[in-house]
Length: 541
Image 1 (cartoon, helix red, strand yellow):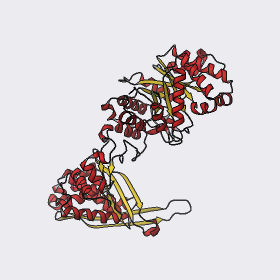
Image 2 (spheres, helix red, strand yellow):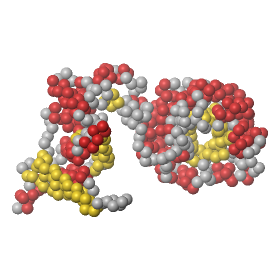
Image 3 (cartoon, one colour):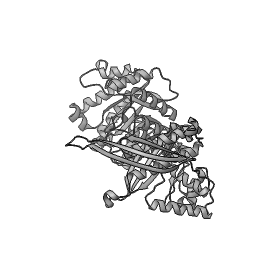
Image 4 (cartoon, one colour):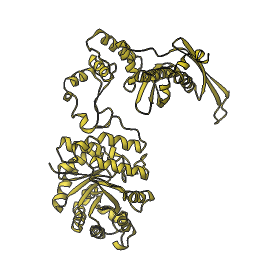
């Protein structure tokens, strides 16, 4: 199959998306991630449009990329101004990069209404700009803005714009579905006609306003396009750009095109998650190919079949894109789920053994009561340890009381001052440890009190910190007496784990999740207690 070149515009078009922003240092880091992935072109921004993009190009002069070529983006010259006198073109050259991409109008309506010039003058702008840049940089790519809308209105004119750019020396002619509403079969037909008309390699730049950006990009390649523009995770203006995370493996693993090295493709999940992390966005768990749920199996029939041969319910090997298979345990599970998950967590359970069946029945009952273990594998692991006969008693909770007193009730829009006190008494060995703590609320106060005790006795727990806390009402029809589920995530700086608690009382549900959180970490680290802390009386004597 033919070579297809990836053109990433995360650092330019992606940053126009709502809720997506990167600093200069973060843009440089993303550029290296894209280079490691095997992207051919990295569009860094529009020099002259903002200080951040200019700073990025300056920063990249001191960076070395293995294969990607940094690209500057801009527009054709302004009407009535020669290319040599146009400040925006001067900024493109000052970026000092080997590739420049310029966009121009390919829709007659855009030329006459938006630019306010004649269709013929618009063609001259495109030709002059591309010719001017082609004499000064290694590669010029022409983006035909609104190409598919323009071709629907007057295809002869749209093709004339492409021909002008090709004649002036453009390396690729990128057809842009700028409004994102074109159907795949239309994209394919127009790509084929553009390629036949100019003989110059064609690219595709699709937006996702109709949820068709990936499909349109794949169809464009099927009909002859050899350059695909898009962003990591589909970030971009409005509904986003074509998602290269979906396009890349589809082209390489499904259509058989030569895009990146196989070992580079295995970094795809990492790149996807790092871009989310750097832009401070939560990963989309159900994202195809790289999402946490992309290869997750929950139904017992599915898991039983996957244990025999993963091809039964997986379209590719998850390792090919750097992802991993996950087996979930729930009330939909069978013995195969439990045995698989137990083995993953380090427990050898026979799926046909009575103890395993009893454990499965218990898990189903807990799920029916409101528990969910999909994001609480630490709590699930404690159940496995109990069934395996290896669950250890690290501490016993003798008392856990909490009071909240409103000292100054709220008046109007003001917030009332309150204080919350928790009293916790935990027995470790033959000594009971009482502690009183205060917090911003009942859960915080209980957590502070519990932590004061267990971290004092078990120093290995001092590195543990909470990173997420979620409360979900299970059945809102019960009003304020409804069952609630609390999910807590914690980390020790190396690994992350989740626990779950369920009750009609949010404080009790939180307490149960907190107890599981620390018990799990003790089981993982086998933390030895501090003798002086366990027996404070003896230490003082």
